[in-house]
Image (cartoon, rainbow, N blue to C red; front, side):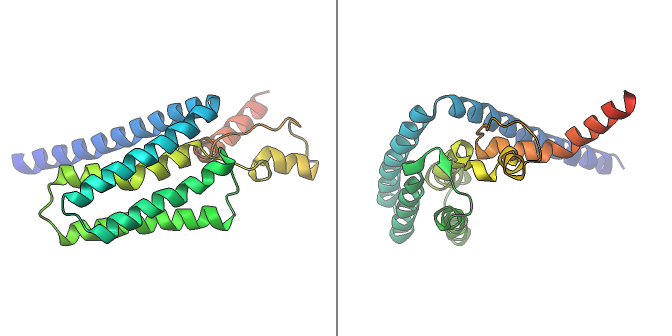
Length: 198
């Protein structure tokens, strides 16, 4: 009986720990997105330098005996992502370039995932390091820092409809727009409660 209870407590601890890590990562990304919004020029340079640095990491990984054609495809994917730097930090979320980059990021991830599933000789730490630096870093940096075009923001739609709202348009990066979208139902409920209390 004691082992069942300890097993349940252990499982609960792992679940709470994972939730805490996810929450911490989300808060960290939100803070980074605030910084990126203030310094877009420096962020653009940092992303470009990180792509060149990751090219060197890819070369070293290839010399370590990892699949050469996968390394080449991953390098190409990172350079395709940098096409968004031409209009950085603005991006049209419905453009073929953006949708193609999203599909490329998912494809690149699964290409490496299945490679490491078939080659279990790599230590877990090495797999995580390669996936983070060579596969996820550039798309994540672009996602946190790119700003959707004004037409896709709710304030712009209100101004276009003439349905009120602030006429001054503000730009926010995509991560903050998603975060605000997830919070919207709570804000709506809070407004309703404040209206009823008046």
